[in-house]
Image (cartoon, rainbow, N blue to C red; front, side, top):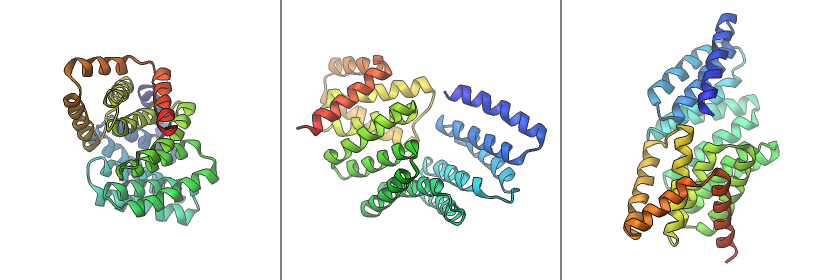
Length: 275
């Protein structure tokens, strides 16, 4: 619930400002930046992250800077600036290792892995992905694990290995469903649609529409490059299906309640993996 998170973060920020608590201010400014980033408001996100950095850099304990570097990297990556993103990720990773923060290390390794597979470096991406997954398993971090499994699935799918990607997506989806992590669920729906589009175009449209509807409910947007890729897939599916069939499939996907959409996605994966 990004709207509620934004309201509470602003209230918390005001209290920390009254107390002169730099760490509390830094946390809330960073959170507000991430909310703006998820909405696609990158200029506002950059301002909040910069203000957060000004607060956190004053602290003797630099542990919180590792997370900020991760978010700065995400901001750059989502604006198609991979070199800048890598610089931020590496700074954060070095800091996380120096401080012994395994959770931050796992997250930053996962983000570097995303850069690798987006650049077509699948072997390096796979190695990093396995490292991140192992760290999250050790930590018992279900949210982080759900993200790392999703990333691992994306790597497999990018290499046309749908049969390997689907079980990873399923494990990620089920974790996200238990956590109520709706943004991540929409990501998995979209990724499943890519795999389904190769042989089951109507199912792919259902999943894309469910993802789109969930993002609309959350008032968040895909990064520009991912939005362009999704629009290209939609255009392809419009050609494969006739207009009436596409429109009907899209309406069906948009109208699915979340629990039904999760069950539908799970059913698809189960059917495909049992063949």
